[in-house]
Image (cartoon, rainbow, N blue to C red; front, side):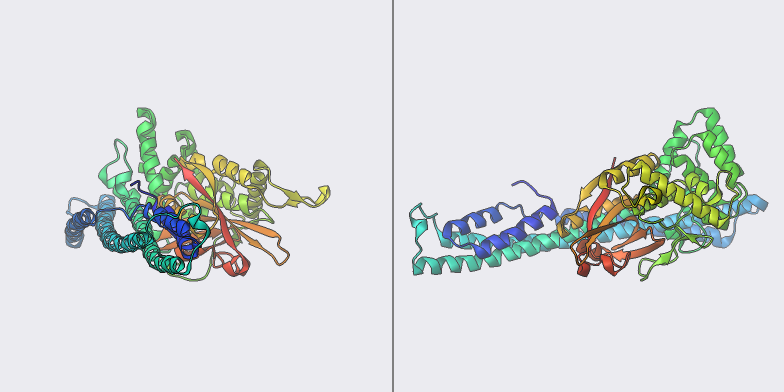
Length: 526
């Protein structure tokens, strides 16, 4: 029996519930039962999953003991031979090592817990499915052989009674099978989400590259923008760490020596991390060196304000929207430019060189907020033209009026792909099952630091469609962080995303009650 995708199994069984409960003839009921029995049961070996979970938890204990040993080193003080600046640097590395050890412990513990939960869910779902299949087989036996061509024309009272009784048993069985499929699908998606997230937390190991010491990797992976929770404001994403490490390996010996000098001359850990982020974004060493000339010596607050269009102070459990601005001017859209506007901000998230061009101008020193607003608007209009966006109004007063999906894919691939390494494809969402199925891909992308464009829609009282584009930029637990190009970020639940209700990230016009819906997701493909 072939296995099926957990969401497809769930969807197919839901359709068969309707077929069985409404079957008006013996042969229709037999066909529906046979189709239900052909659906593969929940897959997975709970014993193997439990073994893996225990192994992960054992690794978590080892990492916790490592953290305790690092803490002892920090508590006793560093060797006396490490004095002056050397002592300061060593102290930072020890602290980073302690946090990395704790992060490893949390990742192994979290991964072990996710596997244990999945193991229990698989075991329960398989047991439940066996009961459902037994009921379906019972109903199939009650029906006997198929009616012939003429027998199917007429059903006497006894035959109808037998069919209805079998249909009742079959309905109980298919309902049980569907519940098992729902439980298995929910558990598989939750496990995929958690494991992807914990995998992305194994940060220091993603930064390869000959010549980078363990201390370099620890410190760079541990560096966050100041203000807010460090875990939610890390400068180098998992994707940045992997791409920058690969870029370092590909440098010539002479260029590698130049890059090493730039890193060694950085005045703060944040400056060093942003140099690596620029390299990860695909810039040449000459361009990184020019960028260094613009940011060198700037303090951590200046770097955050100029290079991080989104700073997260509200944790995933917070309600309400958090504004994102530069010196009082929002990172928001100009007119009907939600698609290019969200794309501009997403690029600034993954490309610090571009972010500085917007906030600081060509030489990085123009801090005038009005000038920032003008540069931001110009970029939004440039992308609107690049994506062949629609316009409205008379020729002397023409203004942007939206962009179709082809244009959105084009500007996503032109503006984001060179800096993330992936390309975008539109994926239409026709309902809950489609949104539920795409969640693991979304969460994997944002856990790695790759923004995911989404479109929502609503229909007004006249039946006219209105669309809006936003970006999923973060994920913690069962919450997604969404950037709305109205200049705000919001945490929403997976359940709200699946239901299509993103009014928390927009407003009541785009709620499920107002026919709001997530109609398109732009998934990155390697």
